[in-house]
Length: 77
Image (cartoon, rainbow, N blue to C red; front, side):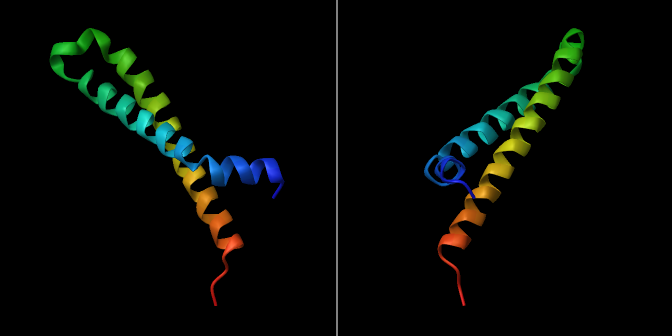
């Protein structure tokens, strides 16, 4: 793994958590927009679902990257 990528993955791991958290918030807001009282905003709710899901996926992939780098730096066994 290149030095720059390792730096981003390991030293800035908090960014992945933040991206995932933002994704979760967007997903919850999208869920609320599907309630009957917000029927005119359902299209916005769909887009918030999509964007929120994508951000959660990016956050999870970043977390996986952090674990992979930590395992390579500190192998067990």
